[in-house]
Image (cartoon, rainbow, N blue to C red; front, side, top):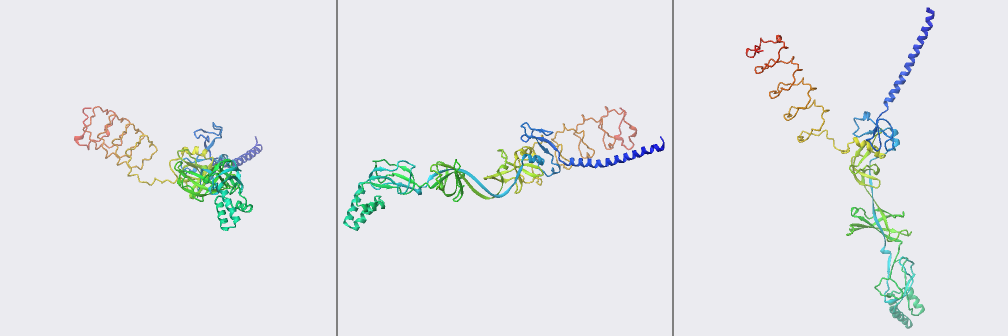
Length: 525
């Protein structure tokens, strides 16, 4: 191939090499950027079932209950700050679960309680009908309890000899035109129960009336009836009761646990089973408890112009009162399993943690928190049971957030002599800074300890007493004594009869400076 033929080939090769290098230079930053972005996204550690945190899988899927598995993430850079039990979920999962939160607030607590209420007739608006002279019922106009009557309506008529005699005296005084006798006769008839209208009609007609009509004094309903035609009636006998039902009493019976819970003027909502309700104010509170029921009665005034309420009926009384400002959270944020009440804290950035709390009074919509939370902290109000099932595994639910830090406490006066450390694992403990100089190891059993990996090179044995140590079972075959100084060792009492010195080099041993009394006698070897 000539030089002219090689030039096109070399030119094509150069152009191809340049394009390839340029393409690689463009693709390499894009690949690195994609890898950097992928590595920046948090990767789930594993997936768990929402209702069973012990069910774990390395990939997404469905739980045995048919629910979508929830990913669990590592805490990344927040591990140093997060408390045990902190979990992390992605924004997508948080949205799918419908996680909602609310802040712990310090506001007045509205408390609510329920009690039994009984509707009763108001005695202030009830009247009893009696006659004031002996007589006999001649005509009856009302016949049943519950019958409505109007003021002035005739209830019954009766015959009374005393009233007839008083009429004759009045008519005689009128004929004689004696004012004093007329006034005396009229007063007598009024005292016997005759009303002023009936008396005026007698003066106008000038005729004795054999029957006396008894009329209703007010509008109302007959609540008691003791009448029968022809029956004899006496002045002390109660014949009828008429009650005005437009104004009623409500007696609320508070159990002993709620005694003193209400005061005059407190708001009470009365509700019947059919949905009829009324808002009332406490009128009076009985100071004494019922000796049989151990209950306290609170009386309310009920305006019943509509007629929706009936005496003898029962209703539910919803009692409400407001306390001083206290720290509280929504009731639906509290998880109470009967052992330890807790809430799930929303820490932000998809992080959640179960937190033990101490609960106080329970309000209408909120619950008082005595310990475990601070004002402004966010608590989960929905889907908290799913989050708690995972967080409770690692969370320390035996402590509160506001507990004292014991890291600065002085334990020097604490007696640990009775503590059993046999089950404790100290393998991860750092003993480099511990001072063992005052520790008594005389009763410690090291027979099962492995010293093969222990480094004694820096240990000072100059003050150690090895006189009571038994080396009979020790293997010295791998021990290196080349750097040991035996110049001060006394071998006079050592028995070398069983020692094999055939491999020893005695040419390097210097005996010139050794005293004669400590020279080794090898004549017997």
